[in-house]
Amino acid sequence: MSLDDLNKSNVWTITAGELSQMIIDAKKHRDEFSESEKHYKNIIRTVFDIQYLKREDTEKVNKIEEMGYEVFSTTDDNGNNAIAIRKHPIKKVTDLTLENIQHLQAWEVLDLINHNMGTGWKGLPLAIQDIIESAFFVDCTIMPEKTMRKEGGIIDRRKDDGYEVLEIERGTWIEGIFMKPKPKVEKVHIDYSIDDEEDGRRRRHRHAEEDEEDGYDEETELEEEEEEEEEDMDEEELKKLDGDVDEEIEDEEPDENNIELEDIDNIDEIADEEE
Image (tube, rainbow, N blue to C red):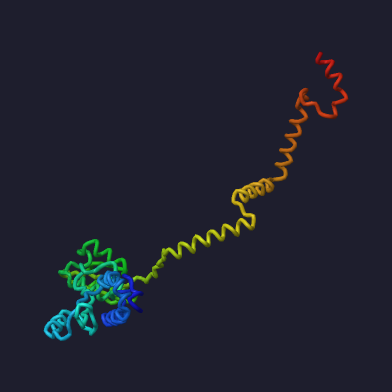
């Protein structure tokens, strides 16, 4: 993986050492790195803290390592020759986000809840509960200690189902918080690049041309479907319809203004009657 491959999802999966190597490799192509450096930093800073420093400044190096940074040798345009990197520490429940929750284990989240001033699950803000439940199945119940911890009880059943368990004492009662990860859902990323849009337009245009060559016309197809439906009408209904039409024709009075050819021989008689 290189810096070009990083996004705000997979950046959580890399270590500080891997990130430092990506930066070192990217700086070998100085011009390309400079053009995209702001973009890289926007992604990296969602997960990592980064500081540039001089390796020979041992006092600062030691201080920054005590803060949880890892220091790596590299070069920098400002005269620095080392880079210090650490992942954002998640020390309390309020550090949880929709991004980092996806990369924690259930026991880690339960540990954060356990150290959250004894609030338990139901005492957490709803926003934090929503973040946790986006990645984990959570069940919480409060029972008397004997009922909660009896053999074959709820704790044993939840453990058999793959849940991690946190027990918080509430006097003679116990609050049980059960948590297990939800199945990971692979997100589909659609690249709306200009090239893809142009390819899409070309494909649609090509398909339209192929349809024209095949004589395809949407209106014509609809008319043909309607004609097929009419042809599928019950034959008896058609016969009945034809019979009604014939009866109407037989009952019609001859139209004197519309003389058929077969009546041409009687043209003189018709003229005499009009006079």
